[in-house]
Image 1 (spheres, helix red, strand yellow):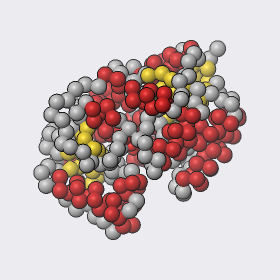
Image 2 (cartoon, helix red, strand yellow):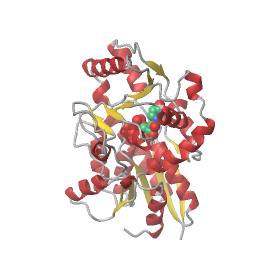
Image 3 (tube, protein in one colour):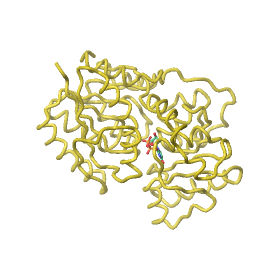
Image 4 (cartoon, protein in one colour):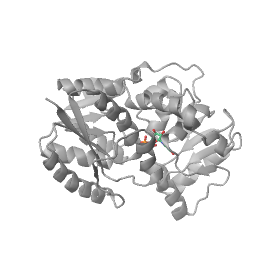
Length: 349
Ligand code: UDP
């Protein structure tokens, strides 16, 4: 029997994860995929470029739902996703990470008694002010298969009493990063375009609501980066939320090399050649490690504790980074997506 999966994506980090898993699904006899894009991120810079560069087939459904408050956005998605799942009657609903699209998919599927596979299960920041934390906890609660990227994720689920269907498979973002770095070396022109020399700049990303939603928080981030930029130029591909927040709050990016959000191949090129990474992104913290770059995380906590333990990542407010750094084998060997598909095709847990 061929199993039909409906994959639900909507935001930038999910396109990266879905690229790795979709490719593995296409290789795996016995699985077929219908992709649903909620439209949470929607324009060329935040969505289309990822589908094109990463070779993801165009989504079968595009809901174009974005903007509004969390309840409104999630509610509109829930209505539309439910109708599509009723029509499609998939064997499995495949969800990624921790966005409102993830939660809407989880609610719709679980009420229809459709089994859910959650990629990046068990990840926790223990900060319930983060909308992502709520989305993760609730999605894990109703998932049949919980695919964990790390040992910490396994432990988190065990503490929440979730044992059935839990698999440590490694990190699909590592699969994606391995593919991208090879392509980026050939195809990306971003260093030349920005007149940057390898090792001559640092890379920053900022978009978490905790860092962008108040004047005080965003001013603190910008002052920190502006100070660091005196030592070495900082390239800042600017998330639309941060751009809008700065405008609203009357803050400027003086002293920083602000560029529009970049595609994943340009991002891989920027990561591979930078000196240091400054970020509040979950994905970028890990990618800094994948490229073996020291990272400063502009937050007080992280979901990716192994990057701190291994000496690659330092949180704001903690002591200076360790000078001894070690590898993190638990992210796997670039075969996390294949391992997920093997479990799903066998439908064992
Ligand atoms: N990313 C990108 N271009 C950018 C900024 C980020 O391709 O201008 C990629 C980044 O490399 C990572 C993903 O987007 O793979 C992370 O997404 P984001 O930081 O938006 O979300 P988070 O990981 O924090 O959920």
